[in-house]
Length: 227
Image (cartoon, rainbow, N blue to C red; front, side):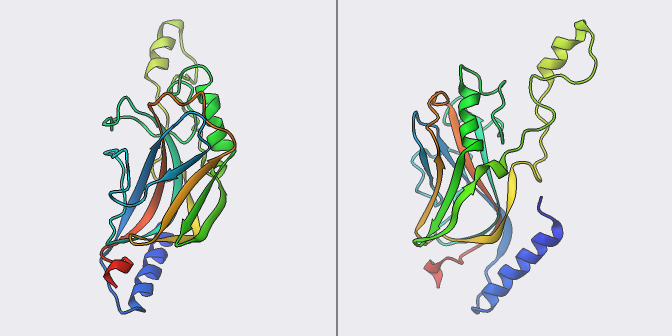
């Protein structure tokens, strides 16, 4: 959804903001990715944002160093099915795929996350995101795992169904632009939460995770720590 022009404008705005404070940190395109495991009946999930604050130490997480700052221009929410804490080969989904999230009521339970849940983001006791609906981040692709399209013979149908995977455009799918952007400093007091209308009881197998992802620009050494 982000355009090259929009990203260039965001980058120019960030650089000018630092220049006005007589600072010129190296600023590059980057991502933040915070994960939490699904827990039975839990209705609020708090996401670690800073290196050293993640009790699960998921290897695929991307957290912010305390010395750096991050300007988030896009936000996304995804779910995944891990085989273990160290598993990094699983796929991210921006909707509850019934072939991946199997088990009685699992996919239905995840509908609560995408249809009736909200993001709140508080930075230094100021709430910059309030009741931000996750429904705007839900993306169910036309081509999905386990579903066949077109005309197939009986002999080929089963093999076609077993090899179909979700279509996914990594540029756009599952993300939505943040206007205004979020300014995240490594030394700020951060509280990023997802609040659900009901706990994900059926989905809490211990192998499912929720990912809160941000895209934007990382400014090295630009936190309040180095002012």
